[in-house]
Image (cartoon, rainbow, N blue to C red; front, top):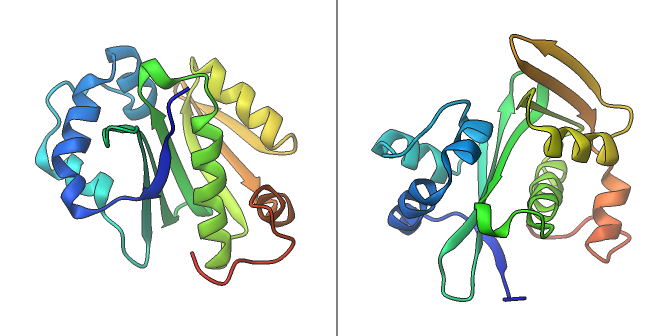
Amino acid sequence: MCRTQIRPARPDDEERIRRFLAGLSLHTQTLRFFTGVTAPAAPLVRALLAVDERRDALVVTSEEGEIIGHAMSYRGGCADVEIAVVVTDAWQGRGLGPELIAELLLRASVKGAKTVGMDVLGENRRVLRLIRRLWPRATMKVSSGSVEVIAMIDEAGLFAEQGSGSTPLTV
């Protein structure tokens, strides 16, 4: 398998994010955005790259430097941090989604987040199975075809996954 790298999103990723979004199948676009985004608008691209005191964004890149996965979080809403993740179709099922989630939640927990929330399209069975595996005690509320999920962030588990028994000093 090719090597990948998870890193923070940067402003110079704009064109790579645009190609990444345009390369997602309509099905994957709909599962992530609840609609198709075949011609990603500039405001969406900028929002996916925005990092500030309330928002974080990570990308997974291939050996060639192309973006093959994206994850973002933002503070507020129904939980301390809400997340959204998408992996390009060719790379799905290889564990990149859970890796992105773990890294994103590690970064959020270091900043004080205790709960995580997400909205999942009801037909997204793969993600709902993942949620049940990662957070068996998560609350799920179905509303208008989507599932609102709220769970506790397991800090001990996150830090153990990172190979450390303690909180990292830098993120």
